Length: 434
Image 1 (cartoon, helix red, strand yellow):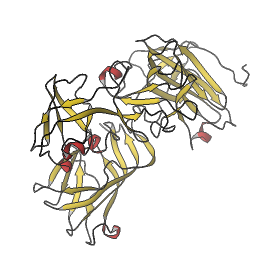
Image 2 (cartoon, helix red, strand yellow):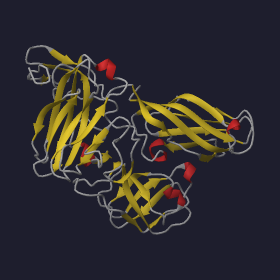
Image 3 (cartoon, helix red, strand yellow):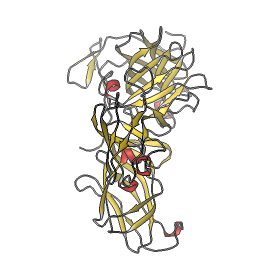
Image 4 (cartoon, one colour):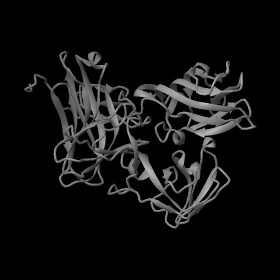
């Protein structure tokens, strides 16, 4: 019996290849689906644009110096003498010297010719560059490197150091980083800013009453990239912090960490996450976040990506804000939701739940999009015409806006101009459907 009145025991858990369960040392079976909200960090709200961290996790990726780029087409080839660690799929932003079409949104790198060029595709609504000029392109990610921007990483993930400064964080899908863990499309990189303990965690809000008088377990994988003597521990805060085992600061080794605890009926908090220890600058790669009902710590291999999980954002999220869309004569164009949302809505989003609005001055004009195939979505229909910017004459539609991948295939009444086109999204459904 521990001082907090909780009885705990340690058991050996072994995984069975290909099975979604583990045998405990007492012969029983521990199983269950991962309930951790958005463990793949598919929706990256509540953070900002940061310079990407390099593959060795020691500093930032250097800006790309662009000598010139092609014009007159949305497919833009950028000439550069040094591509460095640039990789296909990286997101870049161009500085103010570039053409307006290149600066309008984040742009995904679609091709790289080492130390010669890279290719991006601007959004239809951004237009094609018309004038080539020397400029710089910065490889970017979502996160916060100020150390002082508050406790949220995303709506689901939080961080804490001393309440004045907060750990620096990057959300990375670079292959050099995701390869350090298992089954991760994106990983969280956290860098300590104080000498004391710092935390990355999920905290239950309205769910807390339903968790009382139950037993919960949390697990995650951690790779400690640097930091003299740095360690990490899994923990659960059930009003009395319960720690799992520690991991040594061995560079290049992935460790699975897990903790479990009973949640008392009087508990005023439930939080589950990773405690990071070590000197300022210690860098941790964290992922495989797993949380579920279990009386024992979770075995390595417990991680899975929840299917059909709906998550709510802190405030409404707007992946498309106030855009002017001139529908081409063909009546169709494409949009990359990752680019146009500046990396907030990522691949793995199956549906956006909320509203779409816009205003056309052409009566009975339509605007909508579909996914690949024939999955259609709510339709904007301009049924009354009025002054520009008058909300009484906005076309509105709402419901579930389906996505597959990041491509959105828009259609509308040919040659019609729409103003103030915006999404207002309250929640997202992740990894649902084929």
